[in-house]
Every structure is written in C-alpha cells, then in structure tokens.
Image (cartoon, rainbow, N blue to C red):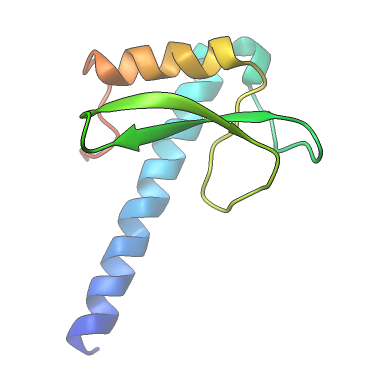
Length: 94
C-alpha cells in the first residue's frame, strides 16, 4: 500500500468510527430521534463542528449527505451538541 492510499484508508476509518459513535450517542440520548433517517423534502437536523469557534452546532438541510447522523428535532440535535461541547463525550477518542 502506498502512503497516500494508507492515509486515505485511515482517514476513512476515522470518519466511520466518528459516525458510529455519534449514531450510538443519538440513539441512546434522544428517544424521538432514535433510528431516524433522512426524510426527503423536509428539514433534517444534524451536527456540525466549527474549528474556528471550537465547538459543535446544529445545522439543517433538505439534501442528504453520506456519513451524516440526522435528528428528528432541533432540540435533539442541540442536546447532543451540548453533550459534545461539555466534553462529556469524545467522538475522536478510541
């Protein structure tokens, strides 16, 4: 495996782990959003990270992107942002 291929694979694995952790956190903490999947032509809430501000915030969109955990309500997404911003849960760690 060439250097770039290994780096790409490691980056993808890190992204998949982050997705799985966020999905598990959502399903554990947000009963209304448990198992929620993207709904077309409706605002779907998700979590963003802003490096400049150094924190998580809620976004909404009507177009689906892969590796995105969606929430049924803004309140559920905000609840998870609050947990992540308080450092009670780490998406990056093992």
